[in-house]
Image (cartoon, rainbow, N blue to C red; front, side, top):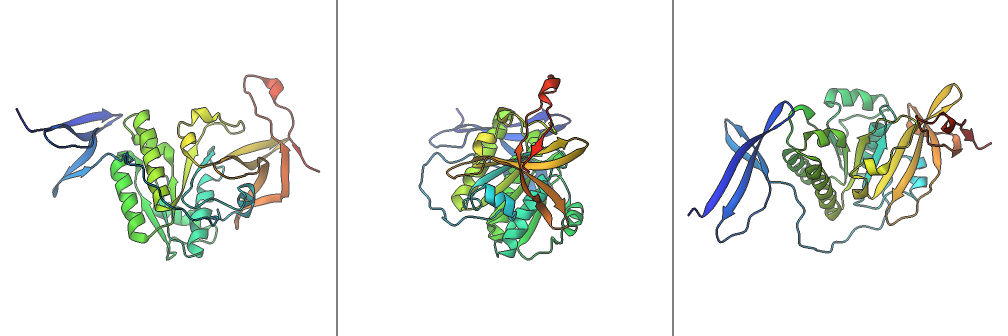
Length: 307
């Protein structure tokens, strides 16, 4: 007999509970489906509608001038950089340079007058400042804003609304999300996480905002299977970072796996991390880096470099 039915519930995720509001019925009107996170505080109830892309298909225009990654070697592999509004996924193991590549992207844009937002779930502002200072950058840069949130107690929809507000407030043209692994742990389930990333990428594309996202994988030397990265198909560009073993030395290498609507070089390039950030190692490409199968010792041939 009621015209409207609203359901409030708390669901347990790991060691924490997440409050959700669900509209079950609204007579004579439409309403967004699904669970919408909310928090209770001294100022009342704060609702964060589920981030979901609109069904209405509307055309929008994007710029045709390439966006530099801030790393000349990567720009070369990407045929002069990214398209505006493109999404880029940086995949690699711990310590391979994912965050640093994202900082190159943000600070290069800031130096060109393009505001950027660093959405960090890894390092807090103090830790991030120490990292940036090591490469001659500062978080006090006029066109750089840091949005740090602890992954311990976040609602992904609340996080997304905060990020969208930061982008709107600063007029940001570039966004770094570091990292997707933390957002995945905060999502209620894998399907919700994929839906969330898709919507986030689409929202920024329509705004002409270029977004870079990092994702950590466990394999140090072996190239991960893209099918294991459930959101890889949602990204316009995929850059793979990994380690390469040459006799008694270990080096870092990068390669572009995918560049939607654009040519890209499939080569694997060795790089160094120094005071200037990411630079090519001797400017020489690696001819081949074989995938290593830990179950098959015969798959461990020596790596060779072009003479």
